[in-house]
Length: 385
Ligand code: SF4
Ligand code: SF4
Image (cartoon, rainbow, N blue to C red; front, side):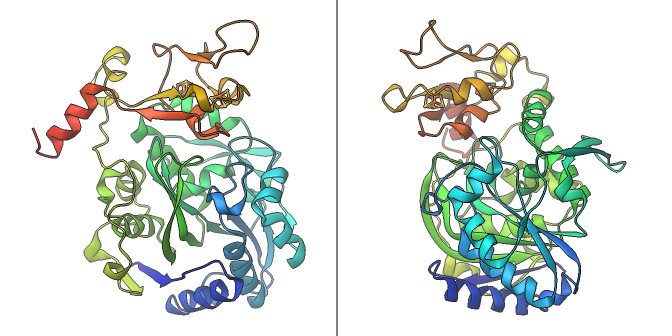
């Protein structure tokens, strides 16, 4: 039966985080269960974008440090790395406070700039990946995700954290190729099954709610959670915020593809009582995710049922990051004139609803708006119509 260690951690005070993580490791049988002396282990935090720790965009440096210290005490040889959605990895690590902790501990940054092509025969959605050399040249991976809301997949945690193993702009290609949330989730599960992190350390001391994964609000959950079952871990985190794990595509597909279990009676939660940590009013999309494409609906109909990105003009600084990032061809987001005097405008007929623009906007100027038809559908699904 998969174990999830759930421990209360009320601040990022380094000694509290270290003590709490030690307790969590002990609940799972000790760090020696996951790494051996002399092994080359990659720590994979979430470094989505260049943001300071208090914004909750990235894994907190105190969690990174405590995990690194505990694994180094076993004798593992550690490196760290991630490929952000936007900007350079070095700048993101610096801003997140991770690079400084790594320097203090003598950890090298792994090679996430260059990639190698790999093939995964057991894949259900995507067989060929280009992965960072830093991932492929490690003997094992310990994944350090941050718990946040996510436009396409509702939440990002253990299962989604491996997407950063794909270097640079290659990530955007997947959005174009797999616009359906379930297909995209299945690809993420393939990736996780291939990379097979040995352990996941979920940072949910402060999580992100609302307009995540980059521009939501920090929300305190007081939790660090560890498991070697990414599906069980994400499902447990969802139960903390009162979100049905079956409504999260990565979790549903994770179980379907054999990456773990989301079923409560099949998961042994050890440590803190889950009920005592619940935050049921966490701001997250609680509506059903519908596999519209598989229902055979056209883009025209689908686009009237799924949330669309909108720019809040007053917040837009006209930096153009959203335009550069949009993977649609031709782009679904463009400047209205030759200069940049007005915010970019959407052509929704081209938009594949990947929400990359919302994810990368540095000002939180892009919000997801549900069309009326979708709102009505959600009310119907909740039995209120
Ligand atoms: S919406 Fe955001 S990313 Fe796009 S131009 Fe405005 S501030 Fe930049
Ligand atoms: S406009 Fe935004 S949501 Fe639409 S395809 Fe481009 S990046 Fe994706």
